Each structure stands twice: as C-alpha cells, then as structure tokens.
Image (cartoon, rainbow, N blue to C red):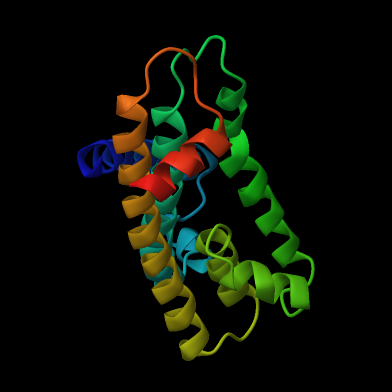
Amino acid sequence: MDGKIFGITLTGISSMLTYSGLSILGGMLFFQFTGMPISLILDYLYLPSILLYLPFALAGILIWNSILAAIASIITDPNNSGKSSLMMLPVVVVLASFLVTRDPDSELSIFLSWFPLTSATSMPMRWAITEVGFWQLAGSFLLLVLTFYFLRKLAAKIFRVSILITGKEPTFSEVYKLLKQT
C-alpha cells in the first residue's frame, strides 16, 4: 500500500511542478511583453511562506492519497460504484479552507487550521494573513504527520481485508467488521 500511496503522491507532485514551471514561464512572458521589470514579482513572493507551504502541502497530499487509496481498494467496479463519488471529497474540504481568508482569527479558522483534513491548506493561509505562533505551526504539522501515519496503516489494513473479499462490493460496515476481526 505504501508504494501505491507514494506513487500517486509523486505523480501529484510532478503535476504541481509542471504547473509551477508553466506559471513561471507565463509570468516571464507577461513581464517580457508588458515591459514591466521582472523584479516586481519579488513584491508578491515571500520565501518563508513558500517554504512553509511545501511541507504542509506534501503532508496534506499524503493524507488524502491514503484516504483515497483506502476507498479505492474497496471499489470493485468504478463505473458502477456509489463510493466513487467519495473521490471528490478532498475538493470539498479544501474549499472549506477558503473560509480562513474571511476571518483568520475566528474559532472556525482556528479549528480548520488544526483539523488534519483541512490544516494542510488552512494553516499556511492563516500564517500568511495573521500572526500564528510557532507552536501552532509545529503542532498542526505534527498532527498532520501523525494522521498520515495512522491513515497509512488503516489504508493498508483495508486493502488487506478487501483483497480477500470476492463478489459484490463490500459496504463500509462490512469492511469495519472485517477490520475488527483482523
């Protein structure tokens, strides 16, 4: 299961790097054709924010890939499964993180920046907008890493159980019962 999770993650990272490269190229073309000095881009980039975002993004990608791998392992036919719609869950959760921009110090924003499924996007947003203590950054990141560790183990167990199931697609309650037995 680790190979599947890390393989999917590396595919996602390569896509992010491709889009980043295209964005840089687009930005260079923009500055070339408008005649504006390229040094203006440095007004918008803040290196500590970028360096903070990368480990949070990687941890978030690993968490969601673990969840998606667990869901995918119990889907027998993706064309006829009702569970396939769960693959869109990360989009909904990430969109909820945009609530942080409205009021970064609200209780909801603080919760979203600590909740492992949203903290990969919410904590860097909060840090970019308002004052966030180092202990909050470190605590949120540690919680992300621990969540990935446990979800990775859970995904491996679900995969192990689902490999043994033949015939119809198992329900979540059946998977839960089988997990308790192993």
